[in-house]
Length: 69
Image (cartoon, rainbow, N blue to C red; front, top):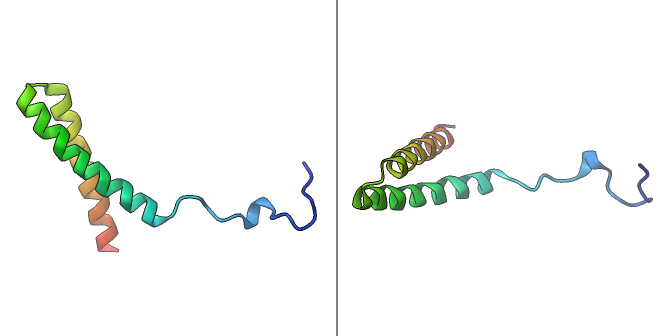
C-alpha cells in the first residue's frame, strides 16, 4: 500500500482513544450500573442485578487503579 507524499504514515497517527476516554467510560458505566441495580431490585430481575453489581465492581476497580497511579 502506498501513501501520498505529505500524508502521515501509520506510525505517526495519534491514537483515537485516550486515558480520558476510558475514564469517562468508567464513570458512565458506574452511573449506568447504579441505575441497573436499582431497577433490578425493583423488578426482581436476578440477571440484571448480577450484571449491575459486576459493572459496579469493574468500574470501581478501574477508577481505583487510575487514582492509585
